[in-house]
Length: 339
Image (cartoon, rainbow, N blue to C red; front, side, top):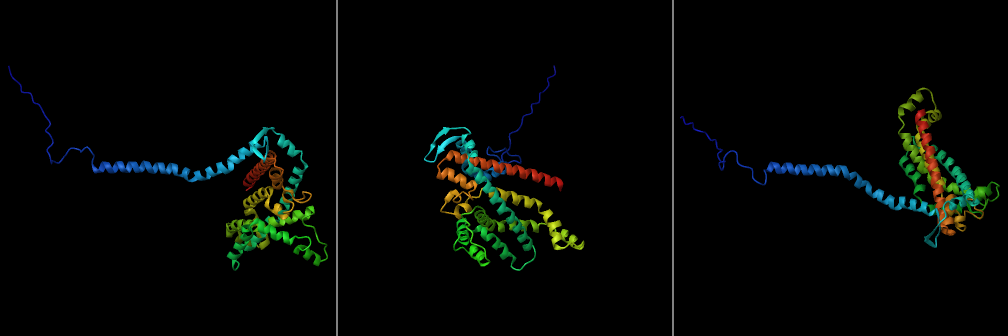
């Protein structure tokens, strides 16, 4: 019987100091570098993903604290009877505050005054701003000085501006009546009569906001390609025709923006009429002849101490702003479709 030898292959143990040493428990330096890069990569991905939210979080926190919460709380208070002397004592009345202000003649008087003051102040303001911007759009010496001067009324305090205009429109010693008397016109009671008082209040608004809107128009004019003006000049168009057929069509979105912003601002006019006749306060004159919705809200809430009714007025004004925004959206869509 033939005996066959069986071969057993056994792996030799690694030789210390050989070419292929065993891996140490801590890992090689290359593995550590890869792990470090992987951690940095994950950290970078988290940073890219969450950093934008961290940057905008302060705005939303402040908006929630000072914008959203007061809005919601005001809407809740408008459904209750609340007095300034006891703001935590609320009695549910439903829509009674809304029906009561809609039945109040002073509310409709304030609404009409807000509308008329808004028209008297907005239309001349935007027209003057357009003219000033058109002049500043040409190359003038010291153009930077004129642009800064346009913003000076906007940066001026409402109280300081109102004080100056009260002196100008004084009945007995005002400069306006003095100038009118020099051409044979009798003195006008700017604070006691309806239309003169509204014109005087609108003058303060025009003075403060014309330069601001002029700079907006100027920025939009400088964005118009010069090729359009050169083509119009080659066709024989005068500067007036260039303004009508080139400038105005190019400024339609900007004009719409300023109209909407000015309309919103006019619906919230408060400081100018309040300071124009400080003796009458929030009443807007002896006969409420220039009382706006803002003054009416202030009178109901802080003079008559009816916080629930004032909250209803605030939400009514908010609804008016929503309607203005919807109209703006519809007009913007039509303008984009026509262009």
